[in-house]
Image (cartoon, rainbow, N blue to C red):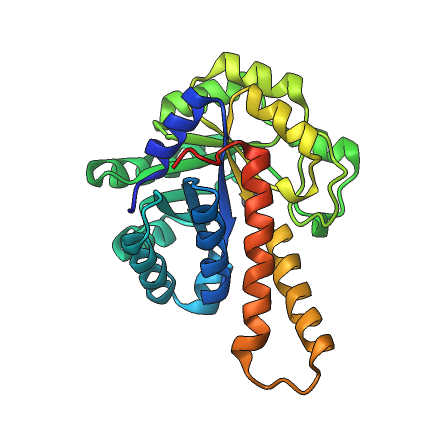
Length: 283
Ligand SMILES: [Zn+2]
């Protein structure tokens, strides 16, 4: 069944676990994610970035996820990841997404808050939830130093003001992770999460989890982190699955035989992440 993020994250917050938000660009990634969540009997957030939307087509991605959501017994939310404009959020609302995100983290505070508020005012009357971002989770391509990453971390007092001004349902916070890391070596600023949690009561979201150690993620969940985005680890699993399939059978020309292996590899990673997040059995 299709639900929104606010519903899933409220339950996660009360139950002290986190819901995985898994990025998908194509049919087999979506199938792998749903199959993993079904086998773990876990709620799941399937999210599409603007890159995925321009790759696969907005209505195509929405149609696949919404049809799968109709057929499965686990709760599924379809979320826009890093919507960079108000217009992108409008398009996703119309396409049937149950959750939106406006990422104004590169904008001045007032501008970020003003546009986020507009998205909330549009989405809430039709039961669609909204995630905002304050502070900035950088990417490995930005090649920042530790000091530069620290300067972008979320300030608890600003988080409180942002939440009050915008009415968002969840807030993506910069607490030490970096997008697109391929190995799990980073630790989160747990104290900062605790301070942000004292300042605001809405669910917190972690981006860039593929580079964070499992122990640090578990600690952060205990401090109130409720949604954890996973993209890089799934992309790696998918691509390595293709490589394995082609190495084993170099003459294979049936895409289903190759991408089927990728789909299974995605499923395995999803199941493993769900267990770390503690959402298994919570569907
Ligand atoms: Zn992100």
